Length: 222
Image 1 (spheres, rainbow, N blue to C red):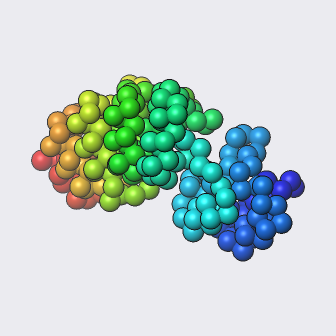
Image 2 (tube, rainbow, N blue to C red; image 1 turned 60 degrees about the vertical axis):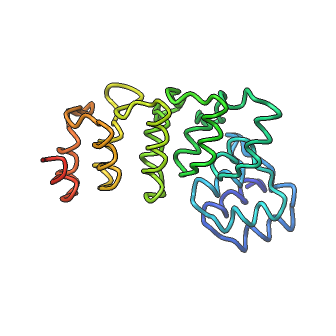
Image 3 (cartoon, rainbow, N blue to C red; image 1 turned 30 degrees about the vertical axis):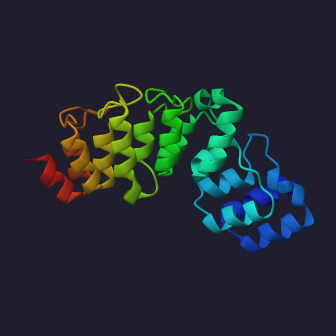
């Protein structure tokens, strides 16, 4: 295996010692990318390896614009936008717009910066997810941050029932699937249509019942 492949494998495993040893032997790998365009910093971010994110930054990793959006490096995001305002409308190598990345990872301040710079809340990811920023926010790993990001996006003009295609999940469908009661409450208070169905014909209530989300099902069944 190549050096970058070894390093990315260690990052995915969360093996801090192997990552540190590899960077000592080949410090240039901190900013290397594999054939798909993945960097160690990006993989550490996607896999939730926060200690490795810190280690990589300490060892000289430079966050791309998209990585800075995902990590909430607000000063870096602002700087890169000043240098190249067009970045706000571009997409990462894996199809994600910057607003999606900030929304998914719960980076509210970064999302605000992007929206102020002209990020389009209606932009659809150019990958298999083909979703909107509100759908990315709804599925983020930080459940405690989902409501504030979703609320921000709604306030900035996104549809509370937004989805990338008629067959996809709405935010309410996803929140019901996750059993995210605070987010379900917020979406309903914001006017979410509980009668909308997925491509499989399920309503949010159907999903909540199927997943055993009893509190959410009770709320949706009122």
